[in-house]
Length: 214
Picture 1 (cartoon, rainbow, N blue to C red):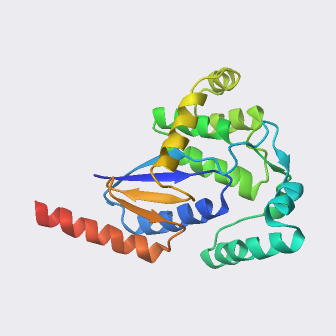
Picture 2 (cartoon, rainbow, N blue to C red):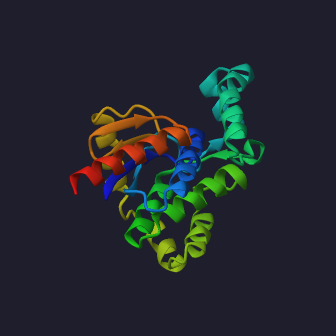
């Protein structure tokens, strides 16, 4: 197996599109060589715990309504072209994602990480749910067949918060400035929401190298 590390934030639209594109490629190669692990990166590490009104946040970040339209136009276009379901109008809150990252980490310990990432993206970008809300996160844990009561207790504690923050800082020190960033075999960094065709070529190249090494 070849390690594929994915550095991402569950409120990043390009991460959502990038995962969807990767999934399309992986579906064509059921015996693909990747062992996938997701890693935390907070787009807004200083976001208040309760989050912010999404319109206020976006207009502040992008300099008004016109700036938001310019910035999100390409997102909408890429989502439509990629067949990615996305209902940005349903999103009311831009959340702090530290607890969502903790949930992804705990899901990984139970071999449910890929499912949890899917559930968080859908909850945020399709259903417009506040993925900083502990009840929402517990519900997603239950959907993933995790122990929702245990997750609720963990969320109420400081468990793994410093670890998540340290991993985020480590990625930044390693040069990661934006997400998604995909790291293949601990060597090759692939930034951005790459198309399925690119991933298909990477998979085929890796398989050829593995076959030649046998």
